[in-house]
Structures are given as structure tokens and as C-alpha cells.
Image (cartoon, rainbow, N blue to C red; front, side):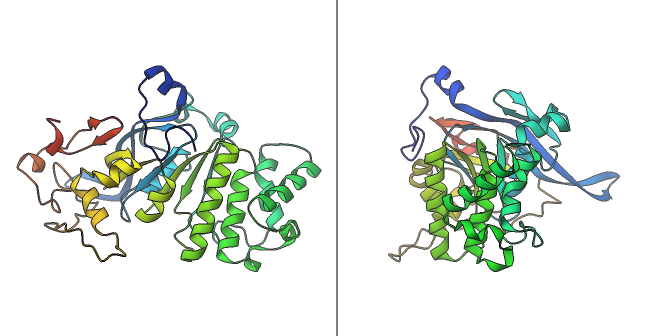
Length: 338
């Protein structure tokens, strides 16, 4: 594991930090129009609402939150699978949002994605080997024989047999299909892989195998992961830092163990209190109301209707990002003086 991993060590030197940053997100926004007008204005869903964070080389950066918080949209926006409304995505200092299609294609081989549903992400009419070779084909990497050899090699690397090269997706189990998806993502030797709920559709016993595989591949190839999940148990095992999203905003960001030991934002505390305990321990957290509609977010803090600590200021102003300690950030007025 790399330096920023499970121990949560801080970057004390700005120059050292700059060398390690592989991706930097600045004020990223993605709004979806509903096509309807309310009081003369177009109604929009703010799926991503002003996100800023840094991704360090070789780490696993997890994004967690309940369904609809914008985490999967964030993952797709990072790779420009959907176009951001506003903001910057700086990959090694280059703003991806300013690149044309041909320029973006050159960099795509360095940024790949593993999708949530391993079956729907695979073409049922193509053999497994063809799909693994496809990224190599698109980017014109190697000869035909070299691509085929690479596909055989990748099948073995993810725990499958080379002879399965000729089979179709329906001949595999869910866990095996996800292994195929991982092999395809690795084909062009990327630097960053966005893992969008890669184990949520799998049985618990298979989940651990896939997580272990991802960790092994990361160590072997110095990969950087953006790991999107709603399973806080899985996230604690694999991640180095965690960002908590709520209604399109990143309400807290911290090294993994620090977040679990000293959660600051009320929403983070609510999420952690929902984790089942084998010892029968209960972590009490009583929320005060219901989740607002993403089409009609309240003025001020979006979490105000559920927060037991809500104040008048929370109903009038949107909290800004506050650095509470090394690598620990939170959007909450409770910690403004800290």
C-alpha cells in the first residue's frame, strides 16, 4: 500500500503533495434539466453541486452516500462520460473539460471504469476475448496477435482461464462477469479506474474475492481508484480516504479511520449509526425529518430537514468547506470556529 493508505498520514509538504496529485476537481457541477418550468424558470436537478477534491496517485478514494446523492454521476463526470455543467477536472494539470473529442480520446486509455452491473455492461453478442481486446483495438495498441495474447494474460490475471476467451457473457456467473469487466478496464494499462458500485450486485462471499482482486491489482500496477459505494463496511476495508455526499454536495472528507473514529457531519454520523453491529451495539442518532426532493431543495443547508442540530443560519445559508484538521474537511456551521 502507498503512503496515504490506511494509516491516513498527512501530506506535510506542499511540493510533495503537488507531485502526488494525479486528479484535481475544482467547483464541479452537473445540472440536469427536467424540461419543465416553475415560476418561469427551468427546473433543474443539481446532481453535482460544487465539488472540489484531490486524488492522489496510488490511493483508493471512496465516495459514499445514499441513492440519489450524485456519487455515480460524479464518477461518470470525472471521465467525461457525461459532460459537466461547470468546473474543472485537472488530470496531471490538464483540464479535461477543455479538450476536444480527439484530444480526450488520447487520454481515455489512462482512465477507465468498472460498472455496477457486470451483465448489462458486457455485450451479449460478443465473445469475452473480443470485449477485452476492444480498448486495445480502439487505441491501436499492438498487433492482432499481441492483443489476443494480452487478453489471455488478463483473463489469467483476474482469476479466469484462457480458454474462456471464446465464451459469451451468459456462460459466466455474476462474479466471473465482474472479473471480465475488470480485465477489460485493465487492458489499456490505465492510471485511474473509477469503480462504480463494483460489488453491490454480487453475493457477499463473491464481494470479498473481487475486493481482494482489486487490492492485488492496485499493488501490482500502482493503480489509483475512485471507489463509489453505499456499503460502508466494504469502503472501510478498501479505501484510504472517504468523501461523504449528500444531495450533490461533498459534506465531509477525511482519511478512512479518522472518519470512522471521529465523524463530524451529522449526516456522516447518521450513516455510520446505520451499520449493523455483530456485538449488538447501537449507535443512536435521531434525525428530525424527511429527505427533501432534489427538485425542490430548501434554501440553505440541504440536510436541514433531517439534522437534529439545525439552526436559523442553516435555513438561510449554504455551509462552506471547512478544514478542521489535516486532510479532514466538513461542510457544517457547527465546526466553523474550529
